[in-house]
Image (cartoon, rainbow, N blue to C red):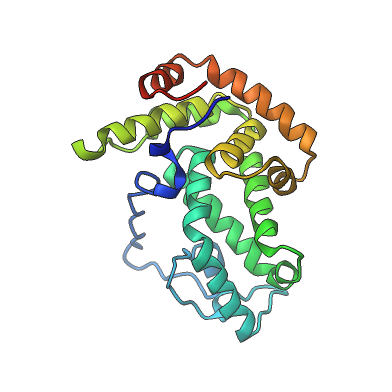
Amino acid sequence: MFSIPNEIDHRSGSWACQQPRPERVLPRGRRPKSPVRRRACHRFRPGHRLPCDAFIGGRSRVTHEEDEEFHAFVAARWGRLLRTAFLLTGHQQDAEDLVQSTLTRAFDRWGRVRRADDPEAYVWRMLLNAATDRLRAPRRLRERLTTHLPERGTADHSEELAVRDVLLEALALLSSRQRAVVVLRYLEGRTETEAALLLGTTVGTVRSHTARALATLRGNPALRDLTDQRGVAQ
């Protein structure tokens, strides 16, 4: 069975999304967007507070209690959502945009989300569906990887970042669904049943995607060399 070396487990959090996105500077004379439009540009950050009025638009209304509950929900899950989005997209900016758009949609329908049997699973399904829609064409991800991989950084992390690059390039060869299954099963540690629930499919379909994905990954020379060097079982 193919497995992932511990050094690239998402729980270490040491290589994914390290570089913060620079703040946007408006040209002179440009006015900032109105509070109603801030919904599209606000960046969620753990510990960052934003009055719920800034997200009011159309029919969206939230109570103070819902606002507090939503921000607590985001603070507890931001890092894991962002790391998963990074593995799915292979690019930090795309990952931030994906999580941001997902959380914005979750906020707009928070009343429905909070009443769900499993609010966390509800939001994860939103994230995975959005990622699948964005990355259906493997070519797009491969182009992003070859032109926008982050710099390798200091010598202390060079080996770890090299592992990351090999993994991301290997994931780019998979279909969007296969990539989601591999990330959930082998990098998130989800069971087949949990992966099926989050992807809105059956356990049998998850197994089928897993088998095809692992066959592709085992045939990847760079990934095979990496696992051989580190003594990882195939």
